[in-house]
Image 1: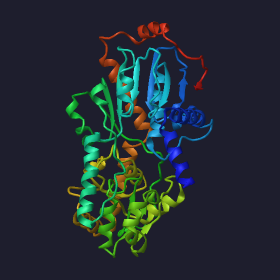
Image 2: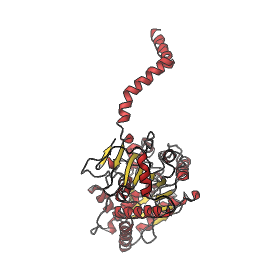
Image 3: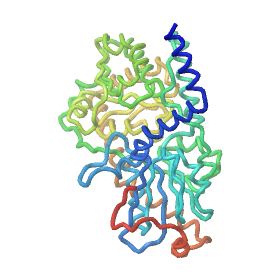
Image 4: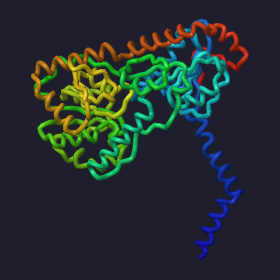
Length: 434
């Protein structure tokens, strides 16, 4: 009786205005310091070595700016380094660059900015707050959210109908109107990615995704030995990226081996649903997440002939590009967003289980010399098109084209003179983190 009375009293106090106020005070005391110290809330200010031309606001991945001196930029995703390179491009042009994390939904611009660079997250909110004459450049690193989300939902529905169970979405993006609020666009990927944005009639400047690691051509690889060994390599969102289809295909092909490198432990529902195929099927080897800079990664790619990646939506296919740098033949969907020529790979038309099986057999039945020739062409293509040097060059050219197209506007120097009427932040010699 006493316990029921106590429970009821607590419930009433909790819903009373004084109880609500007390809860708010408690949360403020407990969580406000943590929020203030959150890396996403920090603003990094970078000062150019050249004469000051104006201010640039970059709202993107900020992990690469927070590493200690001498430490490498994290390589778990290409966007860590690419974000740093975007800032460097403007620093080299003489702009002061302020960097905020893409999820910093509290940041309010107070300076006069010549350019605002951001990806889809937070873009509309900040675009509506910057000065009116600021040029807003959207940096796109994925297909449009409507295409992206629809693709994943279709895959999940197909899985439900095929296997009789439902898995949750893992790669769903929040709706946004970023491109509608952009003046210019830089975009990773290829014609597929670009096609999902053509409706907006905005100028699109294509960039080729970079690669965080380069590898020498595997001179001693045995192509006869590896002809029936394939790799699936990717991050989370396994149904989105077609791992379910690949697993089911190889489960029906016991003479062909599949190695899986990805964070399987992070998706318990998927792991449970496919446990037997993942861990109890002799020709399927589940490794888990792996560092592309590790010797283990090179050992695995040396034993495989190709990478199979039937994703339903990507923005450059970075995992496939890394595998091509390691000399693997790509077998991908069109939506994987990787340029694949028939001389060095296959583009799946339907991404059905039967088509995946047929493609695997077709690759394996080629001669050793043909396999070596295709693998070498894939490696050459990746080396020629997907490096950090190539990304830096293309981004520089894109910004040059954008600045040239605004010749009828005020010059950057005139903007800089006007910016003296706005708060400039602390003076820094190199970098300030606030």
